[in-house]
Amino acid sequence: MKIHRVTDPEFRRYGRVVEGYDLSEMLEALRSTPLPTDGTVYVPSDKNLEATPAFAQLRDAGFGGLPIEIGYCNGVNHVLNALEYHRSSEFNVALDDMILLLGALQDVDPKDFSYDTSRVEAFLVPARTMVEMYATTLHFAPCSVDEKGFRNAVILPRGTNEALKAAPRKEGEEKLLFAANKWLIAHEDSGLQKDGAYVGLKGENITLK
Image (cartoon, rainbow, N blue to C red; front, top):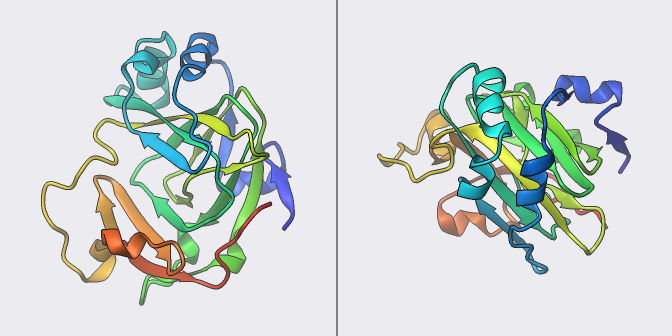
């Protein structure tokens, strides 16, 4: 699978590289977050990351004043497993090199909400880089460049990925709702269906090694 860089023109469909923020303290705080060696961990909101100066700038400039959360997704991962999207952009700040597997919401079949994984594209995010992924970008946990794993700060509107307050109906797009502001399409090999995820990824469960 060809791996593009986020500075390549192919990334423009999915997002952009974001500059002009002082990320030094956030990156230092991110360095102190856990790094699993046998999977990934995701925490939606971390008080140490949110205490850094970049928090206010991202809230006021990046999200136009909306309440935000800064958490992290860290670990070792080589498999696609699922794709998700939000009703908002997501900002990622990579402490280490990592690879994003991305697709476009426009390519999801509106009849059965399936998606062909042959459409997925891979993008290298260099260490100490911030990217914005648009609301129409399908994504999931980053993939590792090596077995050392990655640490990645995740910035989203406050409350995203928290538990749903009401059980979604199992029809239409609503059957993809997996958490607050999180619509998820899983691959049958992921095992996520046991947690209630909708299985709709068709084709290879992409693995990068």
